[in-house]
Image (cartoon, rainbow, N blue to C red):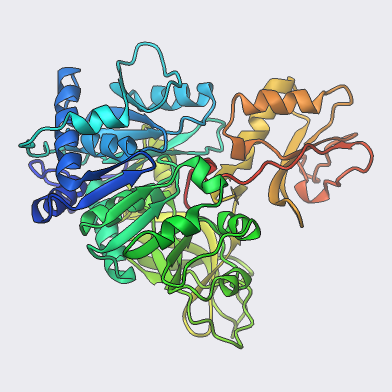
Length: 522
């Protein structure tokens, strides 16, 4: 559990703040459309009634406030309703992406000690021994209560959700996030970007990516409409049509990499669109390609500080600005930003550079059942989080992301610990003569490249085996056999000295960027 706080954010008798936001919208306009997908449209009254009914079913299964419940959901309207139902029950939801390999799904449920699993519109298997409810969107939303019960209180300091991210120890680690922190972030950003009852939010993110919390509860907090875009609509480049037909103020959120991919394939964003970009450093050149839209927001924040900590309105672009990267912006949700200087990075008279520390009410409880790691990264009694992100303060006071202190990287918006990928490779091969780094290619973009000092290794077969154990974004796009792995004078792997081989290299076809591969914020 995370470190204790002097001032509790949630009292013992307070219903879930996120659920309360939705309940208010349902009270104000019960017949307004709350969610739609490719197969149906459902009102706020139906959503709230369905969530209340499903919460009752969870109670019958033995789920009590403070328990953890897995939500394994495909991209349908039932996924957000199942998430709301878990919050309604006073439990903590554990999002699980159906596209994860089975061992990863099992590992997350095991680490979370899940009391039950809600499987929505999916037949993917889950761990034996964990009670499971199989649900389909139409039945779930038609089985609602006409008079919903009140959301059940959650014991302090229980988390609303736990997001599992890549871990350097070789196993995923769970970040516990308070509902009050998430509700505060939702309200703060909704107000900042101008969302209201006529807003339509096109949701593209996996429910296991914490930005999905804002995609769901942002529109629901103001009586807006949530549109769940499925994989075929995304891959078929139908997002422009969805945005044009929204009938209100259209919002869309994704990563810069996904937008670049969609633009290359002909996506035409309507002028009235508000585009939210997060998960990666945002280049000015990309903003210039979409400068015709109403606004582009650059949003930054680790999962450990609740979705976003800063936001920056990118339009209009400053014509003579020489910076290649957009600033990460000003604090949101009461975030308190400090820069911890790094030795040798800031000379007298130069702009301030160092590691970004984030405090405020958005700081998470910590890492689930990892007090050692929590104490290492959550400072000052848990009130500040050491991000590991290096930032530089520009002359105008704005912060720019300038890299990482450790070997944590971002691949298509997903946070990846390179040590976890290396550890999995070494375990599968049977020796540690491996190395993984990030490479860049004009056609592929930034991707993982693996180097294996084993002339007999079948790298294509190895890549297939990796895909059965790791999420797609953690599987190296290119794998090479090399004579040896270079080391530093201290005996550590010298990743900078790695050289891409010529004819000896085996380079599989690049993995296509897919929205469902998102998992994590910066």
